Image (cartoon, rainbow, N blue to C red):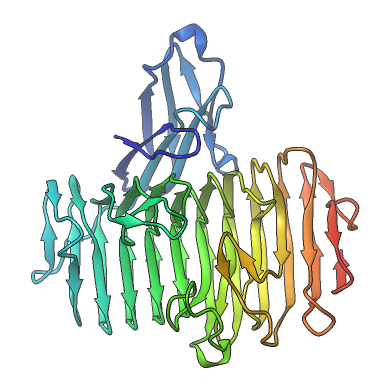
Length: 430
């Protein structure tokens, strides 16, 4: 299946989905090139060690377990990569579920699917639903299946004047939530999914394709707690995952609400996921950080296939626009295959892209661990940035252990190309 994303290179995105009970052989015909034009085909993440056999225009390999496999032809990430989503066999929905069966369902933006306590939404294999999902104050809700949720039509204008649409999934003040198995595609600006002040959320086998530059974030947990994202794939034109403090009214018109009055962000776990960002950071804390505190964030056992950012941002970022305490952040066992900008960017700001912040509130970044992160390719060589705000708003206690560029172990700031200012203290290497 192809989906035109309108991304920075104006290329379509190709994907397909399959449920597998165990190891399965896979065969793909690459009909867009002649046999002599196909020099190499690689299966990503490379960490899966999938051996690809090429015969003419046919590619074959074996998939041993659920997860994402992306095929890249001739080393060209920008033209026709194929994303293959393999999931465990789909569960049957409960008898009282809201069900969208196979076929096209055009709901528009005026009548979103609204979930209340105890409800399940099931998008069946073969279902393509153009529309939105909403829940407010609901408990024990579930979004599941193997169908596609899509937003492609223009709904309004973005704050910078670009065409956009309402976020695809918005869950506000909800508890005990499960999102599993669906694909979300987006061909217009705006966020794909957002949590606002939610607790206990499990996201698994969630696949996002939204290669639109302007604000096409993949998944944004805002002022939420106890959120797990695992075995998911997110390709976005903006941040793949943005962990934000974003309650308290429109940040464009009300930027000065004290973060101490807003719900905290804590206990976010992102593991066993695959990411691709076409035009911003892969995982960022910020830029809106209006939260009582942001702490205990762990990104573990993940692969980044491709990353390009503007404004010199990084694959992984901590970008506070508003003063608050950000602490106990762990990046561990991560493979970055191709990155074109910075690796880590920790930077305080009071304005970005016309979004105002407020650094008059106290805060800082502390207790950050970077452990066993490997970079295979970084354009123009290693580089990262730690920029504190002031003597009383610092970046403090960063532990870097097992950072590698290829086979080279990094043991100092020079090796990782780190730029830092006087408001950074205690950066330690092992």
